[in-house]
Length: 253
Length: 310
Image: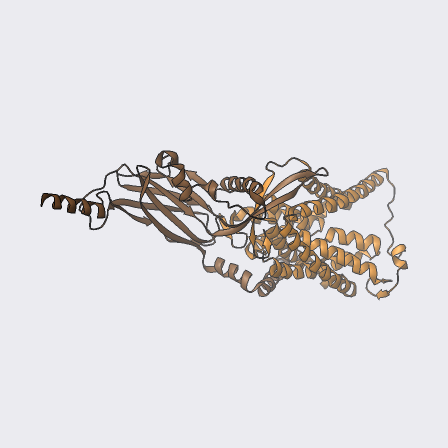
């Protein structure tokens, strides 16, 4: 009888392990509007690590680490290299990276290598350096050289980055993180993946999306330019002729 | 105050845009040129993608030249017949220029060709203007009476076939050089985002011997019509005309041009041309240096947008 109870308890423990955590999180905004005065936007990530719903435990035991990966819409990007030919500098080589993320920022609560193993980072695709894929037509060597340079250029522009003190813990289980989206970050849907690490293992994860969209007049202009290019061009010319005429009238030239 | 440009997809200071529009407008009013050759490089150097800069400045050039063209039209200073030939061939040239623009952009050589084009074009025009105006100033100081070239003097151009009579210009010349001038200016203008007035005026004066009374008006009308067509072509082909950017530049440009035109009275013709030559040469040298000097970063990147890589 005693053995049976012990076995049952062991099975129950195996089914619902004592350290079951879940992540409750929220973004400060899920819809960023680009208006005429848009000059970038700051997003705040809030979250709390809690016991799994229905678990017996009342509190979670840390220490936890949180890594947030924010990815922007994919674009086809090209990296080019200049060399000196006939005394002038010109682009002589280029490699195209298809479906390259336009934005890739990593926020973490500590040094990534202290949080988990390089293997986990690679498997979960957490590092900015891992983003360029090998292009078959360019070959392995050129892909890796140009890919590294592309990541460097994206980092200089502020589109790529790693901030190892970006996530701040408010208590043992609640955190807050801030990210500034530059004004030239492309519009589209963004994905924020949050990973909770404990002893180097991922114990909870959650993905949330937010959209960056042109609204109002800016949206109207951008849509017209791509959907009705001919009419758009005619309007641009009409506006130019009118402005020029008006200037002449106002200043009585 | 920042303003977001929806096509360039970046945020720029509004006063900076109106300011460079105004400064370039002032110079264009002062010298009687369109100002595209200054505005396009300024925008490129300040971070606007080259394709958006070229396409949007074409719109600005239309606005900058309209009031001038209208006032010349009212004074009867336009040879409509001659302008028609120039405009039609100019639009054909613009088709070629916009097509070349797209191909070069896809190949990643657009920046190079724009830099080379400005270097060669501005370098040669600037040097010629410099020599000419320095000679004029030197002769003036020695007290030599400068005799203006007569409009009816003939040169090799007047011996070509397919002659047409242009009544207003009092010319009976072959249409071939007229069409070729229009074609070349249409091609270069749409490729580089310049109106081409600074090539058109010397070409009309020295090659075709068009009288001074109709040169400026005809050239301005040609610039308005050809750049209007180029704006539509760019909007359709590369979708990189930013109306908001062009409008900010127009406001500054149109206002600045009026002040430039009044400042124009205080300077003599040769002095003006010498100053313009210095300006043109400075832009040419800036482009030349960007080609020759070792770049800070030999790697660069671009996005494939609608109509090719930006």
